[in-house]
Image 1 (cartoon, rainbow, N blue to C red):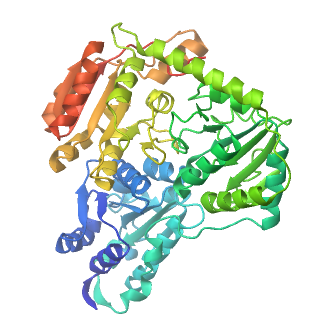
Image 2 (image 1 turned 180 degrees about the vertical axis):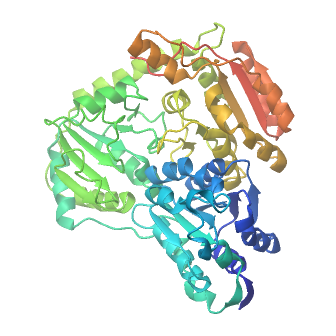
Length: 563
């Protein structure tokens, strides 16, 4: 029994649900959360961030690496209005998140309009479209029930963010909380919680269609990784010699050097063998992907002539955009395991084309040769290909790479060699907003303290969340942050030239010395302007066991997609 304010009950419940960290910024309305958190500081840690949006990104990264619910907090008004970018990222990327948000006292309902109450705004209407569920606590006694509901909503079905809004008077109210254990179900501490299966007839239909194909291909999305389906995917790929391509967030279904892994496919990030496999296949087996604009080449793939099997945990995704011959609604890992058994029990022979696999293997070899040519550049300003080569040479199998939006995501998805299956790379593909990598990098490092974390950002993206270097320094997190410094919004610069014949200069930025800025935040700053210094700088950065910024002067003309 607790006889203190609501914040104590909230924190006790969070601890029971396995929450280790809360990322956020305090305000007067949310101070009960901080009071209780300080009381239990030996069991739960609050990470004081510099921006609420970054708090959401850090919680999002923590969730993706730990498979737990990430938790962030924000106060009323400007605290809440800073959250939408992070909530949108979590919603579109199906990331379990709990955002605890302060609100003005319940009796002030008529005083919020037009900011009559300081910082007042209709934040409920603003937040609702950005979360899977918004929960409002009008009275103290409903808070424990709402906490349980939040964890159930965040982790079940298609995972996503939940907002719990607590008015200041409810937060401060003292009272007795009896039977808190009634609201604790630790099975909702991690995800996935419930693994569902399609009907057996649907699985058998998928087997028949797959076995009748000549040129099948697997397309893995982020749902395959969240489900932990990597091992059964490897078994199917190797046993039946089915080539695999992946979306940016589906990277990690197989190691990149696996002979049947053709790479990433899409408009924004693309490798030639993956594009060939996806466009020439007669059957595309989509696993945990939502048929996004990029991966489907603006919804031109699959074509009407290609057969489609679509497996997803969310029934609203299957068949909504792309015509589907067989829809499988269920957990990726469990469904593929049952499909594998059905494949082995089915008497129909397999007629997959060996010539097509030879062609794809040749395409992959050509692409590897092309990449090596790009890697060997010695020109200055430094071409980003050369940085990616250095990262591949110095990285270890358990390293985590966190990429910002824009071209940084494409550099990582196309050129970074993931050495083992699993989620070792994080991308902001839910909303594709700049200012993700630094904040997400510190969240990833807290989720995996024994793994090395590398972030890559452009100078434009780094400018959004560079303040979180102060948090890395304060916590002495050994994150290595690499900035591709080309004094431009790189993707916008490419679009200017491609679409408007470079008729205006919307993308140009002033030159910034990020190494000096890093030193001011208490990190180590290293500036690199020669290709030969990249690898030694990365190796030195990791040897320091401190937060480091490597500021690399890059050219503004190179683009990651080479066709």
